[in-house]
Image 1 (cartoon, rainbow, N blue to C red):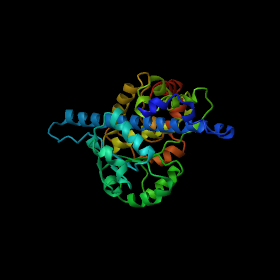
Image 2: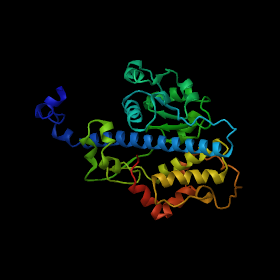
Image 3: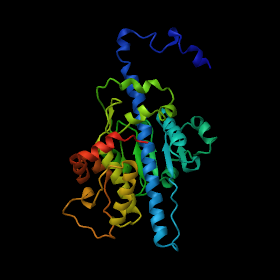
Image 4: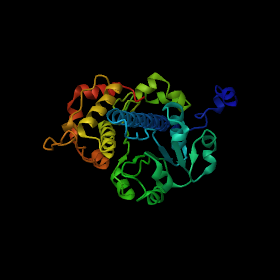
Amino acid sequence: MEDDLLADVRSFSFENPLTEEEKELLYLRARSAGLTFCGCAHASFLCKLVHSLRCLIKSRRANRDSSVPGEDSDLCVGIIGMGHMGRQLLTSLLEKSGIKPSQIKISSRTPDSAVEFIQKGVECLFDNRRLAAWADVLFLCSLPSHLPKVCADLHSHLSKSCLVYSFTSAVPVNRLAQLLGHDFILKPQYDFVSCDTADVVLTCTHLTTALTDHFLIKASCPLTMSSGIYLGLSWVCAVLYSLLNICTSTSLGSSDALSLINIILKEKWPLAVDLNTHSFISASSTLLTEEPFPWISLADAQTKETPLLCFLSSSTSMEQCISETPAK
């Protein structure tokens, strides 16, 4: 109520006490808000993709052999760090991704910051190693200064199939892979571009409200520039390679892996062209139908030219599909 009463009082506005030189830096607020919004939207989108794939894998195996116990398809999501980014991410996952509180666990150095989420059913372990051993997807939301300690805790405690998603911008993905002794890492690399609507994210003060705004959701598309923030094809490639690795970790044959990934792509991007074996690996490589794809280092996939990057770059229709479809 107090915020509502003061909303139109100019003397209480954020800009009022600023000097002219300081006002020239106000665009940084838009960048900060945009990074938080896009980061949470893209992370939630990834979780939905991974969950969908796990459900499809479970369903296909059950249809082929009903006597084989099905694997648990519920996605286990861990978050390390309950600062601004960690709290915003957790809020968006709880309210917009369909992930239940029982599927999320957190680890934080500041227990007080987690009280409201614990009351909703999220478990706080206060133990990075236990969280790493449990999670299918692990989000790193710690400060750069805390990262060496966090990585030391996690080293040798991450399963090969645990997908690590890092919001710590100051550490390159290759360096992070070294610190963790782990190569299944996704790290979004955002670029800023000039845009007349770049400050549109400031129109929503609450993240969950922004995630229901059609214009803002459309602006969060990885390849669009309407929000002033651009993610690019390397992230899209890394996401698709992560889905491929999940299939490989369950020993799913290459034919089934492609079939399931294409099903997910058609659900999200109906006009997307089908991916085939050589969309992901070198044309000189051959795979038997029942043979799983080789494990792909996501660190390499985000820093080197890959067959998938070449394919998507040359496929105008595919790139246009992705750029025009919201990450929802």
